Image (cartoon, rainbow, N blue to C red):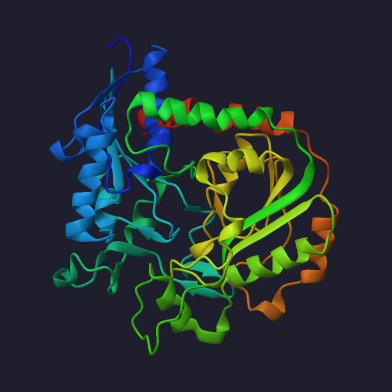
Length: 398
């Protein structure tokens, strides 16, 4: 066999999370490194056809009419396989925002399990948020009768420990590069991101946060759905404080640092409400990278369940570095000077966060060159590079 054949068999019901990888595979195909094929369910075939945006938009409206915005977690996995001279190697990609949610079924049956929000460690006590631990759990519900529900108690996932060697870290890419996975649409979206590199850096640091509080906690919860943020907050109560509360405080600190800092919190209330109390601060998605590119740093506080948000790639692609609280998840290559950790925050009780030290670190962020950040990005995180990593990892599985 002259070149590996990559076959995509399922784009999932979270297609916008996987467009970066599809685009990367398309670039490898056009470069002659692989042969890319799609063997998709009928419901997904439209997504890889050029000029199909109108039909996809109609299809999405029909789905939303009948299903609402309900997402079935067990249908959220990107799947495929690679054929080479050694045989067939299967892989999946898990985009769950919970670093501690996995598919036990796919861990058993896939050769490689790529995890976008991959924990730095797999402690026998579970995954740590603040000072508390939550278990590694399955995307499937404990009671099969709950299938199709939005939330319910989920099974534990012992396969995380039994099949741990299959779990490989990935990255969270830019989400929503278009309505489809056609090369034309993905290529146009990517080139729009690259155009932000021409923007002159004039500021020191920015932050752009959605909310100043977590969702409203679930009351009287004793058997939480560990993938449901309200349940987590209701279960632990005052033992934790939500990362969004730290985001609001970081924005307030940055507001007081003077010229060169831009701090935005779009909604000063609870998350998951669909409310924007500061709509004038919203930056349209198509212009977001050009806004980020104006600054040396984009400041982050870890998201739900300590996840890394898309702001990392939004920043790296245009030459902006990241300042963040201490990370509990990892990508497939260690970060260099393009990421500066400024202290433990996440779900810690607020009185345990050293805001004096955080403020000092934000005041004294070291100068970093745009060229260095872009160089690191092109070396490790660009679409073709991540697709090559997926390919190499899959074909070299033991």
